[in-house]
Length: 175
Image (cartoon, rainbow, N blue to C red):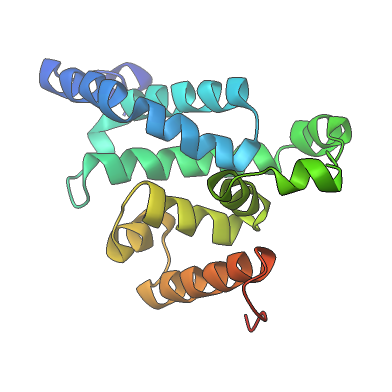
């Protein structure tokens, strides 16, 4: 199939993508941010994911929800970016840890503290927490999206919750 054929979407498919941009575009940007921790870059990755979806809409077979398919594309875009030499050599060298004094830390609200701790989780735990609790995807949808067994998703959720509980002073870490 040549490139012009792969880029031909029907009017109905274009409408579906426009509707997805309007309804879940912001959620997808939030999801991408959890990977790259930069809003501008997250927006760029979401845009690239929608372009990739447009170009490859013919591969969407309807076995999963459109939302799940789009999140899968975005997750792969984010992972590809994180594996890129640009990210490893340029972006990471510009990040400096932000340290808060005891007084400032004490003022952090529970939701902000939870959000910060979620962002500190390793990607494999962070993505399942975000997809399950923030994006409200079912275990089966996460399994499909990340190409993992459902038992693996459940285990990662359990371990992520344990790590969050530990980080927030709620008990010992068993995972």
